[in-house]
Each structure stands twice: as C-alpha cells, then as structure tokens.
Amino acid sequence: MTYFKKILIANRGEIARRIIRTCNSLGIETVAIYSDADADTPYVTEASEAHHVGASQANQSYLNIDKIIQVAKETGAEAVHPGYGFLSENTKFTKHCEEAGILFIGPDSEKIQLMGDKIEARRHMEKAGVPVVPGWDGKLESVEHALEVAEDLGYPLMLKASAGGGGIGMHVVRNEEELTKSFSSAKQTAGASFGDDTVFLERFIEHARHIEVQVAADNHGNTVHLFERECSIQRRNQKVIEESPSPFLDEALRKKLCETAVKGVKEIGYTNVGTMEFIFDDESGHFYFLEMNTRLQVEHPVTEEITGLDLVELQLKIAAGQEIGLTQEDITNNGYAIEARLYAEDPETYFPSPGKLTTLKLPENTGRFDFAYEEGNTVSPFYDPMVGKIIVHGKNRKEALDELDIIVDRIEVEGITTNLSLIKQLVNENDFRDGRYTTNYLQTRKAGEGTTK
Amino acid sequence: MKEIASPLPGVFYRRPDPEKPVYVEEGHEVKAGDTIGLIEVMKSFQEVKAEDDGVIKSIKVEDGAVVEAGQVVAELE
Image 1 (cartoon, rainbow over the protein chains, first blue to last red):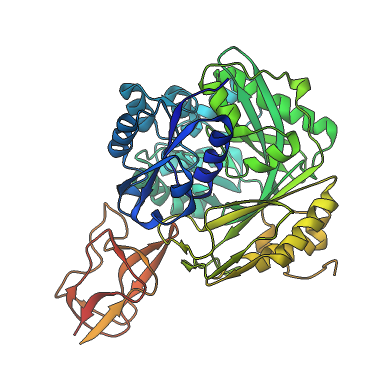
Image 2: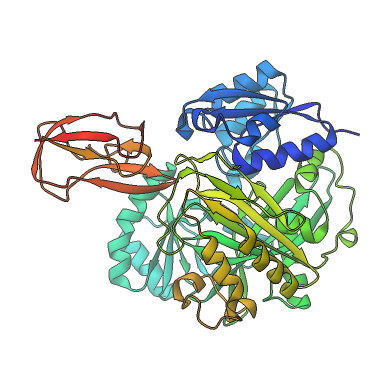
C-alpha cells in the first residue's frame, strides 16, 4: 500500500537523494526543485522530474515559497517533503502549503511554532515533568533585570535567543561584566536574525554531552522512541560525528532518557518524526531538555542502521494518516552505528573550500554513503559545506570504528580541501575510542596524541 | 588604479547585515585593511578588505549578487 502518488522535495543535495531513494522503493513519484548552482548535481536527474526554481542564492530558490508552491501545484504533487534546513521549520511555508491544499510532511504548524519558541518549549517540557536546564523562563526586559536574574542563578550562564536554535544566537557569559557587554548586542542580533529579540538565561554546562532522542508519533495516539544519538563531537556547534548507542549511557539511564523524551512529545501532542535534544552534565550525569527539532535530522541514518527502520518511510506513512504499526517493544537497537560528516573545509581552521571534485571515489561493498555530489560535480559555495555522510554499522563500537577507519583510508577525494584527515585522526584517538569526550573535544584535544596506531 | 577582488566564490554583501548601512560608498576614502564587503561562502562570512589606501572609484557588484573567485568587486584609486 502506498502513501502518496507524487511528492515534491523542497530541498537539495544528499537529503533530496535520500528521500528519492525511499520514494522509488515505494513507487512514489518525486518532483525535485533546483537552483542554478545545482542543475548538474545527481538528485536532479534521480528524481522523476525536476524544475528550476531560481538563482543560486537560497533566498531566490530553496526559500522561494511562492515559486515552490507554484511548482507543487503545477506538477500535481500531493505533499511536500521539506528535508532539513531551508523551509523545514518555517511556519509561513506550512501555512502556504495548507492554503494551497498541499500536505506538509511533518508536524502541524502550531507544533513547529511552539518548539521554535525556546522559552515556550521550556515551559511545556517543565509542565510534562521533563527536566530543563536551570534558568529563567521570563522575558529579560533590561540589562538591570538580566543582572538581577543572573545573580540568583549564578555564573557561568548562557544567554540565548528564544527564537534561535541549532547553536545559533548563544553567548556564554561568565560574570556581570560579560553579561552587561553581551546583553544589548545579543538582543539586537536576535532581532535581526530571527525577527524576535527575546533573550533568556540558562545555566552554562561546562562539560556537556549532546545526546538526542529520535521520536515518532502518529495521529492515532501512538508515540514511540527510536533510541538516542550521541552528537558531542562538534565544531562551532555543528556536528561532525554522531553515533548510536551513546557510549555514555548505561541501560538504566538510556531507558530513563528515552521515556522522558516520549513523555515530552505526548505532552505537546506532537506528530510525525522529531528529535528531542538533551544536554548531559558530564560531571553530575544529570540531563536536561535543550530543544526539539521538528523535522528529519542530518544524522538520522545512524538510527536507521541500528533499528533497521526507514525514517523517511515512517514520515510518509504518518503524514498519510496511517498508524506507525510498531509498538515500543517491536523497536530494538542492534549493534552500533556511526556517521562522519565529510565537509569541504580545512580540517583545522574550518575555512570553507568550495570547488570542483576532480576525484571522488568511494569504496564498494562497505559502509553507507549518503552523498550530495559525485566526481566531476562542483561543491557549491552557496549552501552548507557538507559533501556527504559516511555511515558504518558494526556488532559493537570497536567494529564500527575499525570499519570507518578503513573506509576513510580508501576514500579518494581531490580538487577541494576536506576534513577527511580530521575524521581519520579522531577514529584513532584513545579518548574518542574509549568514549571519553564532551562537546569541547575538538577544541581541547591534542590532535593525533594518544592514538591506537 | 587598483582592483579589489573576492578571494572566494559566493554571495557578495555590501552591508554587515541587512539593517545596517553599507561599508563603503563610491568616492569614500579607505585605508589598507578596511572592510569593504562580505562574501558568504558555505554559510560562513569572510570579509573583503582593501589592500591599499585610496578612494573607492567604483563598486562593481550589487549587494546580494553572486561572485566568482577572483572576481573584481571594487576599484580603488
């Protein structure tokens, strides 16, 4: 039984290819959209049909709501899959889809809005009994007010934009002076970036691990989790390596975390797939709700590898109004999966490196490769620097890391600078091998020291 | 006359953010090291700087337009 006849994919690159793959297996036709820069990339030819929507700049193409809706209407697409980024958490877009009678594959606008407001999200989670980072949920009207609140909470603190998220619009403040200095600029930046200058304060956790829980809920009251993903290896608040299960959790803590996530999801009446992000204090072992992502995540493949489920299919199924069809007991985690993101950037300075991929050879019969590009393509300067994702699945963490190590050696990439050498170092460092790391790891590690080889 | 080129391909901006005034106007005097624009490349922003002192003779690229690596964005005299 199929869910739709034809859907439009309002995205590009590897995630567009990923969605096309599932649609092909289900006999669903796909409509791709593309900008000038992407005309020669693989997803454009892999889709059943493809339509040019504008210039290379995202605001003229992948964020061009009117044009995308127009293509959806003209092609007879019943539903739109937003992927991640771009319009995936944009309520203006979901409302336009609604008005045009096109189904948005994701949660209701109302839920996207609710979770997009970080203060509101905190309040709802507290109500559900989900722990949130100790902080102040009110609006901070003035710097004097902020200083007063900070005095009660105690430094160091994180000053955050309520409409921010994904690591954007955050400032660590360690004392009164820093708070005074950051307050007005944080408010101003929040206003300019998100159209909402509300800021709030949370305790800053120095030694933190970022662990998130994949959830899914249908319109029939079924809510399940698909275990966790550990995403603590980050550069500039952007993830580099993700894995599941987390080497930090024991069975009891894993169960508690996943059940807490389900409780939060039920409280807000969320539907479709989503991710509850938590921050773990590496010292106390306590965890706190951070934010919820109301879409498919970049790192969803690690969950697919350990559960054997297709998350894109699950999204389509739920959007089509069907039941998940699985109980919590049906969903098991088998073995160990790791994803490494290959970025077109300098491995040390993270300086971007767009350009032509003169060579891109991926090994065969090993690993899973979700790549945006093929050899001969140009890695465009207009979008994020991710060239692709390398995903491995083993019986245990060591087996998965060993496989990743071998794959990294066998990948040939030329024409641009990539972080392949960073991935190679990481998978051989003792601290990483032993699971001893926090979100500070990439800043504080001594590269190549304490390696297994 | 000297040319100021973009070191990278991407999108050229004349302002630090949409609400702010432009970095420089034609006819403005600049010193070596002054920022004259930004290049957005892979979601990060790199400053384009004047390498010499001088007066901005012309700005060759519109705010928000696509540039190639090495493309001249302004002329200095």
